[in-house]
Amino acid sequence: MYKRQVLIDREQGGREMLAKQGYHVQPVMTLRQLLEHLVAHGRLSRPQRDEVLMSLGLT
Image (tube, rainbow, N blue to C red):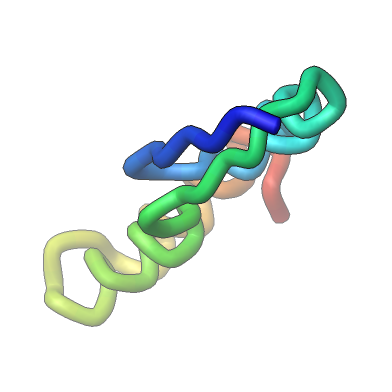
């Protein structure tokens, strides 16, 4: 098994696909966590967060 660290897991299936190929992917954070961090610090509104999640099919 190969280990790889990535900054952000976009939660669109790439992590699982790579696992099937023998890679263990360790993200620093998920996209949802990043968006929540931005909302908590006033850099992104909740409607903007929801729009991003919806546009990526993550709702």
